[in-house]
Length: 257
Image (cartoon, rainbow, N blue to C red; front, side):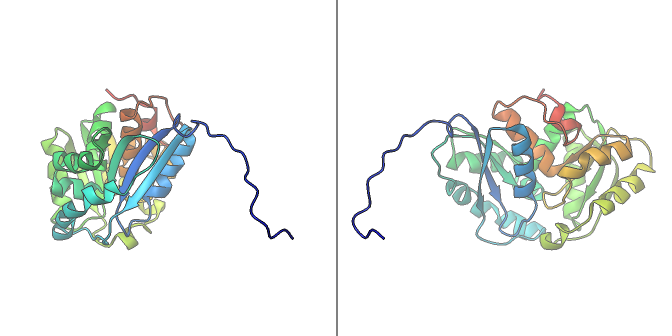
């Protein structure tokens, strides 16, 4: 075995990483769904990398804790410090965007990455529902009141009528991330009994839905939009990636208006 000085080895560098689409993602400390689901869509899109930072504190879906998240967003986003230039930076919390405000959320993310586009699941979902022409939706959330009702009101204030709505009545994201796809389907079927809608919106990045959206759409006969699916769609479109991505529902095959 040689114990002398290490031999200096030649190497070359290339710009292959810089040629890929770099997305930044701020995730709640205790969130267990978003990273996996966005990575699935990124891999299916091709040449997309998702760089993630997590907030320092765990979050539960109460108005007080969601509002406190405002203090952590810009700092957490600044921790995503990489060579490739980020094309878009997103925060993964639908209810947080509602409580803090969509514009304020964008300002905080832009404070850390002023050259990147910004988005969040609520802004993305509203844009996605509009892109699908969905004027009437069935809303499914895991939230307790008053967060659930505030989400319903926010959609309606943005021109999207909530024809039916229901909640799993939870504020613990750890448990929300374990709600089954079968439960999502049963909830949607129950709400659709009230009458036809243009889409079903599954609000919350902790809900596991992305890899089941195609089958849900076929079973329900209507488009399904989830927070993570909409977030990935909007981030990709804002980053200049306009190609259809099959396998993740109608929205990922839809252009940004």
